[in-house]
Length: 485
Image (cartoon, rainbow, N blue to C red; front, side, top):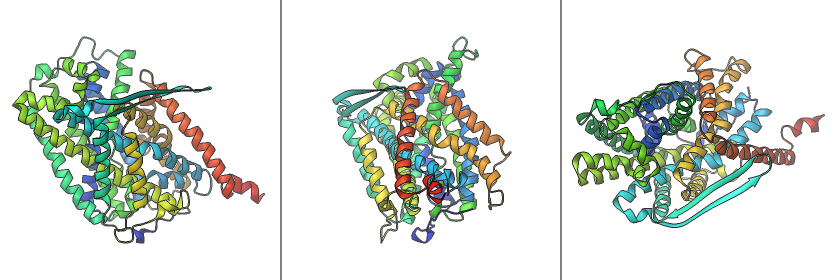
């Protein structure tokens, strides 16, 4: 098997298990769970929304085992870029798959980073209400033949500048040696855990079981409404869980990656799943689900946890909770930008992306060009609506990356059975098949699911065109074979 070049000597393997797990967790526990609770409750229409968290946890654990096996077998920087290229033949179809992944990452990675920045600015509006003042709002519609209408809503508020400033601060902090970054991540992780712990303890000490489990009539009736609601709820839950794979993008900087990567993935999923379930049940025990559901379409959704703490302890608690959640959101932005910046770097080393992205800072030894470009694009995406960002992000990732990778782990075992695998998926191949089926379910079992699928379809079509133009000019697959003939 041809291995892609990673040039590990340019990067420092300075991230151990503690730092790797904390990076994953602060990536996972961003602002998401603090703003999406009303959305998932509204989607399922009651406390049975917890099923979305539970099934979401099962789904990401199955997919986590896919990442764990691939990450341990190919422990270089780049994550899915490296995996898809090797799985589907690095001299053939794998080149196309790797290009499509990098192409979608140009959009999905900044979308993911921007979602954390937007969420932070929305919570900041609890402290400074003027941040929610709308300065410019414009809807753009584009009709495409055979695909349908594509629409995007651009909203510029005072908080948009706060969101962009958050991203800029993350860039500044990440512009230093990885060993220092690892220590910063552990420091941020402490703040994240303090925030979660305070919310959970507050909810438990004021818990009302009748309020928490006041299921509406027909809550568990297996109707089309139930399954559509579960699909919408799982989409939100997946967004909140995502980040368990962040350590894979840093493979070239992980100590003892064959052991550290799988352990960090599995530990972070288990810990975060427990945290989410306990936190959400405790909140439902204080705030009636009907009230949470009503806030899903109102400005109150932006800072529901601040209202929760204010109701329990007073104004001071609402302010303190807001500050802590802003800390948590920033920690997630920090971790996301760190991980994703390594992907175009790895692709550029293999000459599958623009050469400039392969540059490493001479003193800090980090891929600084990739870091700056992704950060700047994320700042631009801060003008989009958060709900649109979340839905588009999840669907684009599923269609272009996750579906190919879950099946790919099986293809890789068949194609290259003898490659060293320090970690092997438990109960192979069941987790990969469950993950694939679950992702398809989330894609189609939602109302208006075609909206985001259109975005992903356009990205795939444009990506295919760009790849073939590039491959034709450089005489790479599939044109290299024709030339040889």
